[in-house]
Length: 461
Image 1 (cartoon, rainbow, N blue to C red):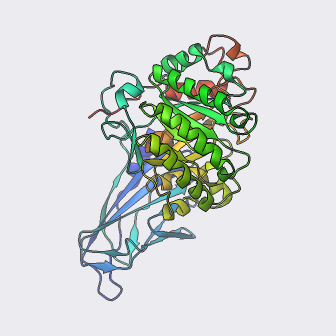
Image 2 (image 1 turned 180 degrees about the vertical axis):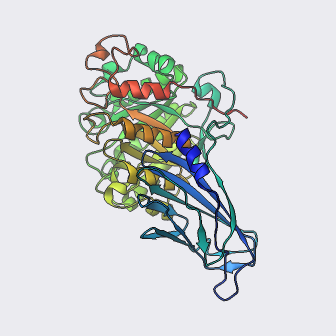
């Protein structure tokens, strides 16, 4: 990737943009464009275009540029109305950036795909006048804070949402990386002192997501017993310095309002019991499906106050439409959430993916939505959406690289020995005491362990 980005940087020797022009006036005296490749993965990339008006105030503009290679395609863009005709891409200002005063800027962005090489555009026009510009690629070795001593919870403390980021007690954006349990009604034998010691110490996981199914022989069959088991796993994670995501794992029925009363009862109990802890994150609906965003929002706005009454500080994750795909799996996108967000603070929105099934379109959505919404990938797999099949290493790596670049936290499905491709362990592993060696790891487990066991380097100043 570093070599590709270096080639991209040298491919562009000049940038041109038309000046920003009032429809009723002569061309402005000048403008500047800063074009930045912010990330790249196999067959795709994300770029930002910052346009600064150096001339007279203008109202109404359209940016046009030609993609220099026939294999390049516009996938999606934001902060403008984007289209493509042949090799020409157009971006027209929208309500909030249509008018630019002298010295004002508009920040645009787009996701593109390519085959073969990925040269950058060498000229842009905006209402017919050329501008100066610059090209910047991401630093190949970005500066990081010195490694902080202590467990993830000791270093980061009580988390909060700041802007579109998950931030630590110092107000600095962080990324948590960890694992999700499978259904605790089926795989309780996988979650014991030995397995959680391995997760914290060998895997160096920052979090444990506790998947408490509501149906499918879960919570509804024994509310007190499942609530106690969740609390026990929260304590075990806390003792090892890991964050615990309490996942109210609703899947069928897909409308979370079916379980509204159960959710209120459950979250009132666990929030009251765990309010003093710094390691708890609440996920109030796993994967809403077959239901509108309006219905999901209504559910969230009834459950969140129950949690806040007991625990006013913890981060809360809200599931999204189309199995927590921001609506993509239902043919929608994040705009319905941007235009109608949940009326609550200190919340994040869930995004789930399975790498072999969900590829470029889903990555493009996350790339775009991450600039407008705080996202948390509370579940993802390296295989197909069924949880089975072969590991898609290329897509999994592209996803993980993107999440790292955007500082989006994630939990992998699953820390279990289920007989399916997504499981981290080979069947029978949870009958023993080894949860780390190559002999017990599946291909998925080995890949994910290699990613999350690298240093976090959480910022502390």
